[in-house]
Image (cartoon, rainbow, N blue to C red; front, side):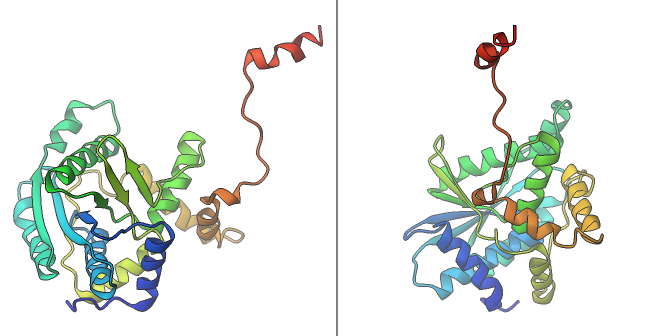
Length: 262
């Protein structure tokens, strides 16, 4: 692996996100959530590159959560620890029995349960380690898929934000990869020979998110939908809102008009 050998086109996308959304300030202590997948390894590499190539002074550390989906996770994660150490980033592992929590809450989505407890552990550990920010490896595909999934499943136009302040923990969550496509990450990780850890999640590949990802890909193959991804990405912006209906009125708000017909 070549340290700090990030292509300029990708570096520029990350730098734009950092500048546009004001993700990193001087003297930040940033804790990176590292699962061992290609996205989180790429984020770790990219932030180390950003620290090396810019004059902004900030510190990095990394945390991997062992969800206890498999018995050999800690053994496999040693490659991630070596990856972080080679970049000069301290890496820690914390155990949390997410597999057991999913079994206990069988009426809830396993993805919701997993994400909820992962975030809780990350927030707590960030406070323990003195970090004021947590960096997650969500990229542009994740944002678009979340936007489309929310529209289909809840009827709401929403997605995650590049920067979110959590007032309960006094932690700021940042997502520096929001302008980077998943295909760019995959290509770079393969070229660099990242030792990517296979997801131990028993639900990997069968989630609603995976269905939405595949739906977008299939629709883009059809005539008239070839620009679907870019249109969805544009629709996430607040200035993209066109003509929409007013919010539903309550009975009290409609009362006067209703009785005018009587």
